[in-house]
Length: 210
Picture 1: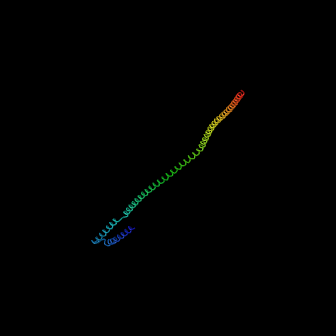
Picture 2: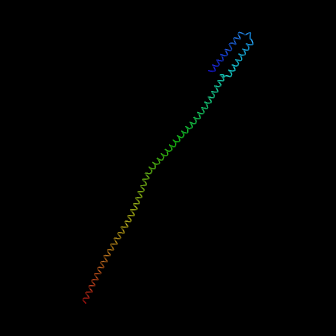
């Protein structure tokens, strides 16, 4: 907008300078004095200076080039921003991937621990189930051994009892024999005593008679 206004002002200025020159040319086409030539040179010099001023000022092409440069700069900055954002996204995605990987690793560890616990529980149940028959078998073996030991002890006790009974019977038999012998000897002693008494009495009677 500023460039267009400036160009309009320059065009008006040129029209104002060209109008007197055209009128002067129409009125004095045949008679041109040195003074008119000087004015004409001044007008040309002013026009040349104006053109130089316009040339030195930003033209639409220069403005477009500047816009292109600014656009390229903006595109470069945008590209750099995109790269930065991409790097940030890469960093974020890397962190996110690491977080996901850690979470998955934690879940795998939890599943592995749960699997170990399940296997331990299964083994514990199997051990319990197997221990019941084993316990029954062990109890049966212990009972059998106890019975065998009892039978052995009972057999030994019976043997000892039989021996004791035999010895007791033998002792009783010996006692009976001893008693019979004692009784027999007592009777013999009594008979011998009676015989001695009879003899003594006979001798005493014989002495008295003689």
